[in-house]
Image (tube, rainbow, N blue to C red):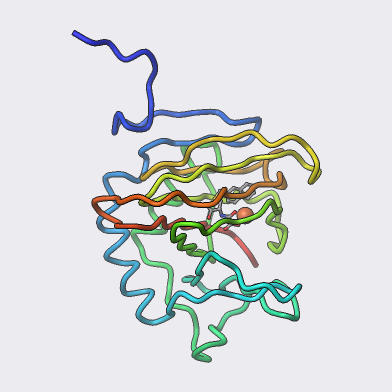
Length: 217
Ligand code: MD3
Ligand code: FE
């Protein structure tokens, strides 16, 4: 009989990994809900299609994005901001589905944030080669509120640095079903995603999806 030497994400079992004060990975927390989350995502993307936003510097982001919630995150030549309507359609973003809210609240509570009420969910889609360079999330009003992130599909190497851009970044593999809660002293840490490696996930195909729940307003 072979005994595992260490617990890992491939076990399919939930386990908790503390990254730093304020940040915890809840591995496989969203694995059981994965199929439901993706079916719902198809509805959202039909109303508010994924698009490659332009950075204030004029670059097209390699990650494709959309939003649901009472406001959504946007980038264009004029800057970054949250807005109640999708500029592509002029209509409000699709509402946050109940299943998304439940998952985000449960993850936040399990990490010590029992009162988390997200109003925005930014949805990132990574094709092979897509990446997100080191940045801070600071467009939200209240940094005492955590951010909850849900990874689905292909695994990605997540970089988490410190409070200054040049602080050395650690790496952690985010696999299907991993939920990360960032709060307290971790809330303003620099972070990013390395270029996605090609592969195939049985539920999600040749891509990675990340849902990030925020209290923006
Ligand atoms: C640490 N998304 O949408 S999720 C983002 O996988 C973003 O798509 C990445 O960074 C992704 O802004 C990383 C993990 C994450 C999300 C938000 C954070 C880590 C964070 C906010 C503060 C600190
Ligand atoms: Fe971020």
